[in-house]
Length: 401
Ligand SMILES: [Mg+2]
Figure 1: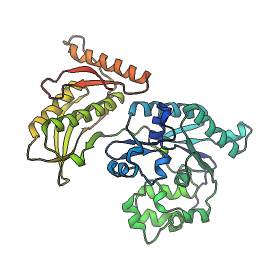
Figure 2: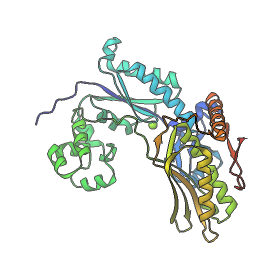
Figure 3: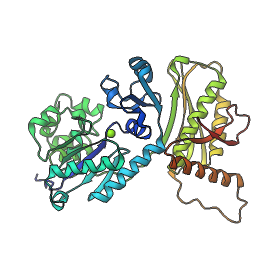
Figure 4: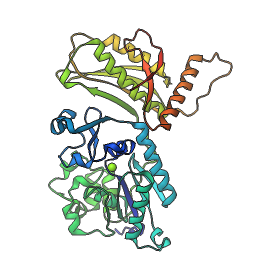
């Protein structure tokens, strides 16, 4: 079978240690220090930490053991990261032929013909693009270039930070050096399935289109085509998540203390609601969960027949689930919550003949002011405060340190 080889040029642009670099941008005094962003695991860390073998997804206590008091541990600031991400995506959209965001800090961009238009060699154009993006967002980025998106993407684990690499061909020798795990969408189970036949990217291509079509899944043939230099990969447009969650563990303080567990849950709620409202979502289902001493997870759900987006309504249910399901017999190591069955909250129409709930409107206004202030100062300086003992479901404006 003859496939039409790509004559396009794609770049895969990826920010280096994105969350950690955003924190350094926000506070330049952190430069040169060991910076980590965490939830209950390491979510991001700068290269100084990576030099000490600290890895993303490492439990936080392990990172603390390595760094002792040298580490700067920061909680993630979603609003600021998405502000920088939007800034980069907008810049790329204006300056390349087509930009397809792939995650918060990476995108595929088509640049076919742009080097010639700028009277530059491909290498000089890439160097210039990299420099321009860095000057625009002040975050280091790496760029990989090839004739298909996946070919550009597989080089992204070769070297970092602040790096670029151009490979327009399917070089056998290089592909033999790349493990199969470097190819996106070939998850562990598929790697296991292929382990005797394919040890590296070269073996994967050699296994052939029809072998993969017969024995594997649809995406694998698209990946095979992409790695063979044929454009076949489609980036889903703005994939929306179906649920969002937030949790925090306190492994070293396993407890059944009601006040402590409630406080943890509400803090998680406040963080999650900030992201939920920033993304303009509504949902049908809220779950809270506790992970007990034996690492068993206990989940309690509440579903609405309508979509819900008001903070008070959501909080009321979280409080209800907590008070109904809390038990002194349960020693917990973590707690958290999930907002599920999400949808974009696009057309909020208020019927003028209905008695509009004033409280809901004032809450909406208050939240928009908080968002404006946080956006202006690029930090979550202000958030809703909550009565932590749950005597009252009302909220009041609280200022975090
Ligand atoms: Mg990255």
